[in-house]
Amino acid sequence: MKLKCLFVFFILFKGINVSAQKYETIVAPEMRIDPPNWWVDMKSNTLQICIYGNGKNIAQYSLSCAYPGFHIAKVNKTGNPNYLFVDIILDTAVIKAGEAEIIFRGGQKQFSYFYDLQKCDRSSGRIQGYDSRDLVYLIMPDRFAEDKSNSVARPKMKDDVIDRDSMFYRHGGNIDGVIKHLDYIKDMGATAVWLTPIQENDQPKASYHGYAFTDHYKVDPRLGNNEKYKTYVKEAHKKGLKVIQDMVYNHVGTEHWFIKDLPMRDWIHQFDTFTQTNYRATTLIDPYASDFDKNKMSNGWFVKSMPDLNQKNQYLANYLIQNSIWWIETTGIDGFRFDTYTYSDLGFMQDLMARVLSEYPQFGAVGELWDHCVAIEAYFAQHPKIVGAPDSHMPGMIDFQIYNAVNEALNKPMGWTEGLSKIYYTLVQDVLYRDPSRNLTFLDNHDLSRFYSVIGEDIRKYKMGIAFLLTTRGTPSLYYGTEILMKNFADPDGKVRGDFPGGWPGDKANKFTKQGRTDKENEAFDFVKKLANYRKENDVLQTGKLTQFVPENDAYVYFRSNEKKIVMVIMHYGDKPHTIHMSRFAEKLSGFTSYKDVLNDKTETLNADMTLQPYEVKVLEMIK
Image 1 (cartoon, rainbow, N blue to C red):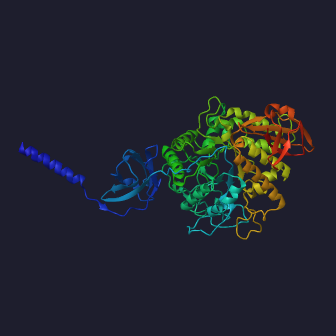
Image 2 (image 1 turned 180 degrees about the vertical axis):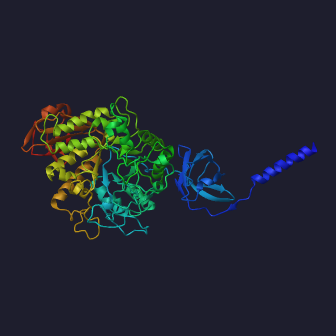
């Protein structure tokens, strides 16, 4: 018995020696860990950390962590020794903000990495969301304004040439330039600002547009840095302006760090020869579509310089979803605009929005779908009224159908379905949406010909389009410079992305000021400002019920109404004066005796007839 006990003791003692093996502590090798930090009080208690060893064979290490509430559930290897994907469970009942020491052990060596854990910022007025109560101002930061007064040193970039005479080189606009002109944006009547992507785009050519990420967690150094972007969000919020961030999930740039060393082969869609998407979102809902066409739409590359991401890969899906959460919580932004929405895996996009809205129910979002049919657009919106359509959890879509309708309405005579009737027929199809007011409406953007050029530089048609944008249903957006009659045609993306005059020292004219604008530019700016601020102050144009009447005799009439106010809008597209008979609109005008002309503040008696001049628009607030 005594010998047996000694034998057991010997075995236990030997086991203790094995488990207490000595490791040489070394300096942690250079690694990349994404997300770089996380929060202990999220609603979801799961986290997946991507560790990239950059040639250090990080997969050879085992990991452990004794931080209370920080549990390493699984360490996933990918076949590429430079990567580990670590599944973490956060015990929210125990875990506190701090630094969780993760110990890496391999061979006879060990090192530590301290992972930053924070508490969520629940400050009032932070992460507000955006909707039809807002007017969104769209800016390409490289082309809006430059301010070097607070510039910081930055690394050398592949596309560092500043050449304002070329539409495909950098022009030098930055985040400080946007901050400098926030008062201009607010004064004009906007309530939200959407910047084209601010993430790093270290591509060798045409990197200015921002849609080819090379680092998901880093602001492009030519625009500023992460701290500068957070300052921008705070300054915008101080002025009552919400912030919308442009996000891209379908593709990245060829110079992205993980494209240079893929975690696994199916991280991106690959083909034997280069295969480009067919750009046909129709194939995703077409009951007769071929598998070949659907695959080419979803998996083909957008262009050669933008590898197509495969969001069916769950490690990539987690990476992108967590990146979205990280930007929201880190900066306090209010919403996303999703680039090339339907090109990404739609199941992934549903999961993404479900996760975002779970953490931030008020968060705003719209998806880009550039197509030619209301049904296609509605199919991908939240809770569509279409048989077989899934719930995308997407609050709204970028409304290309309204854009198409307005362009036709202001360029063609009215017919049964043409001209102004096109607007009517497009809005009739709102029956397919759960909430069409969440759609982002617009007259032009960074991909399209400038509105003023499209309508033949006719200030009367310009006012008609602006009035419609700011009084119809939806969340209106205005492309920078539209308010000062910036012009040019898309070619496809050249001069429509010109610099805002006055945004750079030495510009011949500063059109941020009244003195720097021409009389016609001031006429346009004042028109936008007048109506945008009226809209901001009157919720009838934000959330009021829309009632439209069938277009007749070159005129389209509609009303916005709530329990407090009724606003009547009349659009006349014709080259001769036209008389409107008010008796036709008795259901909305009964009991009113006069009106205020919103555009000139004059109060007039409501007579039986009203004569409109050629290409005139009226916005009338009814008075009893």
